[in-house]
Length: 559
Image (cartoon, rainbow, N blue to C red; front, top):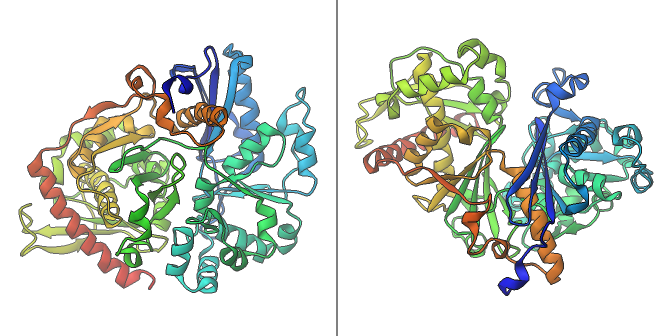
């Protein structure tokens, strides 16, 4: 595409929203792709009448059930529009609006809601007009892990976990939308049958903007256990295994030209989002997925999604539930020994901010002080964070005996009960990223990656970034805003304008080619790669960590 065709209209603005777990954010870009305005609505503090904690309800009567009030998201949208208006944003200059939403979360619309959406009165608030629009008032979200039975039912119906993974990119996961829908069908059949449309959070937000039901985009649809990711259509087999009449309730899929977060444009790039969950995203060329000889072994963990900014390719995603809550809720227990700590997802979800407040003096400064005062590898005293997907493996700490950092020969581990606060903090951080590296390399991530692009709130923490650079052995970059999802949504608004102008998909790089350093999108080097000798020691430790994880899986995990 000629460069003259890729310019954006002067004086135009591009608005992006991010509906995340704990807040709703907005970012406005100008035609030079620089940030003009930002706003945020924090659910707990600004909408306290919903009585959420960290943006969610944790149901104490149903193990693993975690939901969010759907109307809270609607009212947050009202509020953020008011904030943007008070900031003197000229809405008349906004050419395109785009958005991103927390993945897997679902919204259930009552019959007649399409008519409500099409007749919205701009003189009234959305929350007042849509109070009766939803057949289920509390939306299941990605943190929910109450659908283990439904996961097994869906896998069995399609011929097993591996078969489902080959079709949809993932085995059945509790947080995915398909198992959530099946649970509603089984436990509330009348509600399911009376639901006119099911949206994801991203398509729900788009529906509020367009005044009609919005299609689910292909990239977000990849995270439902319902889509054939190779053909980019709903899978008939997966739909039938989930619930009757589901395709009509989901509506059509749409190309992903309008929804994205941070863009990875080069094979070998790795993104790590450090937010409510820690997420690893790897750009992957198509043949790595379709003909990988190891597909039968590694496709049962993590996820393969369609790439939202490249319709020919895929991306790999590894998700660590409640990661920022885990860091904030770290058990800081005293020790003087080398150790590994394994957490299961289900136990991680129980760790709350109260633990950080109790054990780390309610302070990130104390957390960082603990991290600073300990040496990398904890002076050969190390804790590794092991994620056993959706299984209650529990907490495990090990003393590593005779670990020199040069060889695993003669190394023995001994399980112990507790450790000191500084070592616990160091070990928790190192353990999380050793886990990420180990699982990403199973997917074929190059070692080391070409670079890491760190996003999310914790990407502003230099102590954490230093550990990542040493564990992965490559340079770390960040974008201007730690909360990059709304920035990515605004960028995709601009990208959508270009695609519409051209009449088909346009590479997103056309917008910033030869001028990236003059835009907000420019990545800044914030941490050079770790020392080679230290990186080598972490590589050895990672092998030991994976060995311990495999043992825990065999002992406690599913077949």
